[in-house]
Length: 227
Image 1 (cartoon, helix red, strand yellow):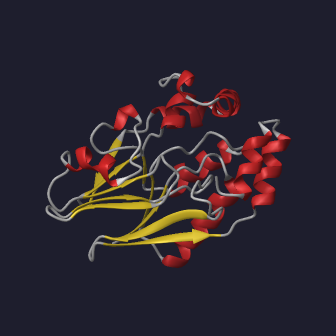
Image 2 (cartoon, rainbow, N blue to C red):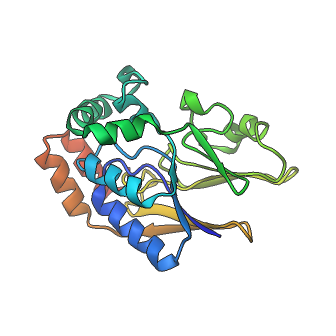
């Protein structure tokens, strides 16, 4: 089975549409979202609508959790706080209820999916380097693979001794690895292979929407540089 994996859409409809078309061309069997459908960008309802319709499963991200009032916005930077408050005002009741229903983790075909970390998903910590991954490998079974997002940076961390892997699929809507292209990936459950994908999308339109919504200019400008 081929799984299309995406994360950190952050209300960027233009990037999401391009990624979904790529998954269609790859003929994936199922699409999974690893959290943070909303936040930062200006198309939260459109993005949640598409995830609700097209994804086989989705998990909770920290921005999703903040929008529904479970994670305090004090933990976010000022730009993120503005976007979270705006998003909570404009989301439809149905989309708010959908976000509230999202689980913290999901396991399919032996693959763990979590937004932040396998070991303590509700603390919203980051895995940015190999040493960060070590305690989380201990929470995984030998031979297991976990897919994450949260950092907006594509990465792979491996524990060769017990054949455990943690793979960060990157961000659809706000990459931070100095590559502005939308990130996603395809995982083959039969072969255990993962292929990371980058796609060009119309950043100009995504940034225009952010400005039109009177969200912080920084959120529009950063899309062009992938930071």
